[in-house]
Structures are given as C-alpha cells and as structure tokens.
Length: 236
Image (tube, rainbow, N blue to C red):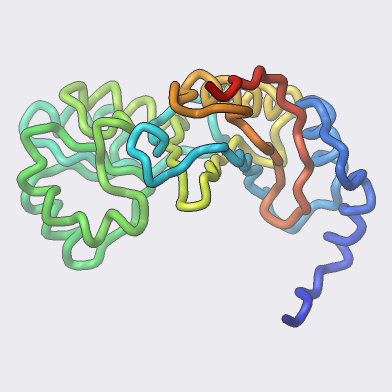
C-alpha cells in the first residue's frame, strides 16, 4: 500500500508529540494549540476508543451532551413540528420548521442542516426519511434527545452547541469539542466534560478497561493521546 504523503505542516506538528506518551487534557490541548495553523479556523475533534461490542444493544452508545463552552459556531437546526411548536422552534433559532411539507423538502434532497429535531407526533412524517437521514446520522431519535415534546428547549440546546455522539462499528466515538481559536482552557474543559460523560455511560456488561484510548486532533493536525484515569472491572 502506498504511504500517504503528509504536508510539511503536519510533519512539523508531529515532531512536538512523543510517540506512545499520553498527556493530560491541559497538556494535550496546549500541544495542539502550538501546532502550525491552517488558513481557516480548524475544528478540534475528540476520538474515544471504547472496549465495547457495538453489535450488543446495551453497548451501542448513543446520545447528546451540552459542552461547557459550546462549539464556537451556531448549529443549523430544523424542527419537524406544527402549530405553536413550529413557531417556538423558529423563535428558538431553528432555520426551518414544519410537518409533511418539510419532510417532502428533505425527501427531495434538501439537507442543508446539522441537526433534525422532531415532535413525537411528527414521526409519521419523519419515519419515511430513514434511508436519507440515517446514513448521515441526522435521523431524530429519543436517545439523542432529538425526538421530544419540548421542541423549544431542544432547539435552543442544539443551536448553542449540544453535540450528538454514537458508537461506530469499530467501537469508537468521534465528537467535535470546539475550534482552534478557542482558549486552551476552554478546549480542555470541553474535552474532560465529554470523557467524564462517556465514562458515566459504562455498560454493566463491559469488563476490564472501558475507555481504551483517547486522542485529540484538529482538522489538519496529527492526534495527541490523552491520559484517562479509570478503574478496570475484573472478569467474573
């Protein structure tokens, strides 16, 4: 297999990382902040490798969490709701709100949004969008808090930077935690908040270490490994 050619900026950044070393959250984001910058404000992403079997329902984690310092951008949210709920959604910051007509628009190929929220009574319209929204991780679900009767509150939270997460087929969770322009302390706070949240979700069926690896990277940078304190559960 042909080795991927890395940019000089990437190679220079990689020199600041000691291979095999795991850093505290504060150290990791400090190293990241010192990397050469791209010509745009890169997104900072957190990757968490879990000791889970995603094929088991109780170990296939999915949800949403609000970050202490947000994401540094306003999320584009739509709401499948009608009447007063639709009005409340628009007032809370949704870019569009509606029922069957909004579902038809999405069905026709419009996908210019980051989060879709739905009132339970709208699932009759949203249900048929599964093949379109599912592969893009945009399908509303109660587990992520995107199917709810409190449309106004959900829209406010997601517009402000509440993030969804889900375990992929390899047992990994990938979550944005902010922008390169953030102060290092804010990135560290967001990082630790996500890790602590994920730790609290440990399924009772998981033995040994739950979180195997954690790393943080910006859009164009190498990853920096983050140390995580945890207790292993012994095999019975």
